[in-house]
Amino acid sequence: MIFEEMENRGVRYSIVTYSALIDGYCKIGKMEEARKLRGHMEARGVKPNIITYNTLIDGYCKKGYCKKGNVEESKRLFEEMEKRGLRPDTVTYNALIDGCCKKGNLEEAKPLFKGMENKGAIPDTITYNILIDGYCKRGNMEEAHKLKGLMKVWEVGVDTVTYNVLIDEYCKKGNIEEANRLFEEMEKMGMSYDTVTYISFIDGWCKKGKIEEANMLRGHMEARRVKPNIVTYNALIDEYRKKWQLKEANRLFKEMENR
Image 1: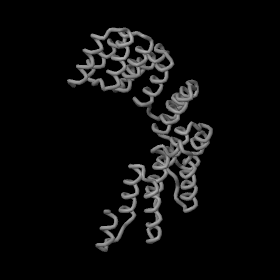
Image 2 (image 1 turned 180 degrees about the vertical axis):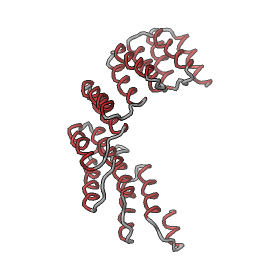
Image 3 (image 1 turned 60 degrees about the horizontal axis):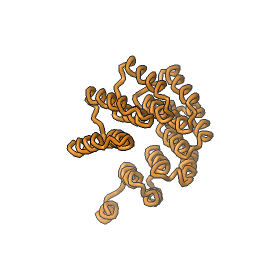
Image 4 (image 1 turned 30 degrees about the vertical axis):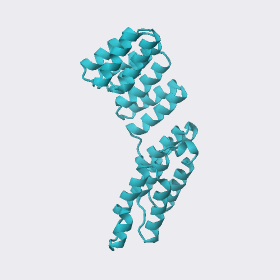
């Protein structure tokens, strides 16, 4: 509607206008509209730039498109931009690697990662976090840790997300000891914890039936001014329910409602 209104008023569109509109469609998952707009753009003699391509590639790699096999469309756009003399940057590679990992195809993600520097795109923290998450979801903790080690070698900063991904997988596997080791490592580095960090531990302890430990961690969480969310409460309430401690489960439910 906005696009048509502008056209009726004789407004000329720039690459910025088109890219903003394409980005809007991509964000709400309307990839067909984004694709049509890109065709309209070229028909009007406005050439797409790297931002346009990155937006479209990222759009296809999100909103469930990769799981439907549409990572191929992202790759086609990647090849097209190279043919047009546009050099893919770190943002381009991150979107593609993320798409491959979401599809569970690490075999396709690896050569993209290895080929980045040859194309002048330097892997950043986001690149590594995407791959670490991919390996964790596969249960390949050895490769995930190797990548974390590479971050140190190449002086790429690890962040809370890096640790959260690893901690979450260890907690899911019931390996709280290794998760705790990483938690202590975070403390030594002076890194901040967030709700995700705590939820992983609380859920891990609850799965082991250790409700006291989970509650202690919740206390630690609030002492650090990290607010529990609905997932935190659900994990605790569910465990109390399993133990038939319904009074405590109801107390937490009411507390959650009052927040």
